[in-house]
Image (cartoon, rainbow, N blue to C red; front, side, top):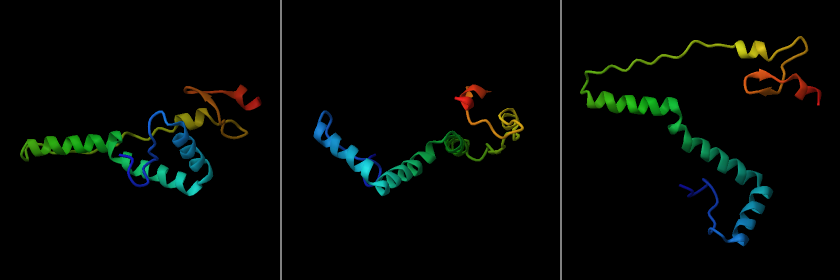
Length: 106
C-alpha cells in the first residue's frame, strides 16, 4: 500500500522516525508532490463512479450477456454558483450550502 512513492513508512511509536518523516515532507516539495499524485492515482479506481462501473461490469458478466449497462450523467446544475455570487464577485466562504458574507468581512 505504501510502497514506492505512496507514503512514508515508520515504526509505530518511534518518535525519531516520525520526526524524520515529517521533516522530510516539510523540506521536500518534490516528495510531497509525488506522494500526493501517487495517492490520487491509487484512489481513482475507488471513486464512486468507477466503483459503480466496476460493480456493473461484474453483474453484466454474471448475467452472461443478458444485462446491458447504460451510463447516464445527471443534469448539470449550477444554481450554487449563482447563490455564491454577488455584484462584487464570488463569495469564497460558506456554511454548509449557504454563503457566509460575514467570513468575507473578517
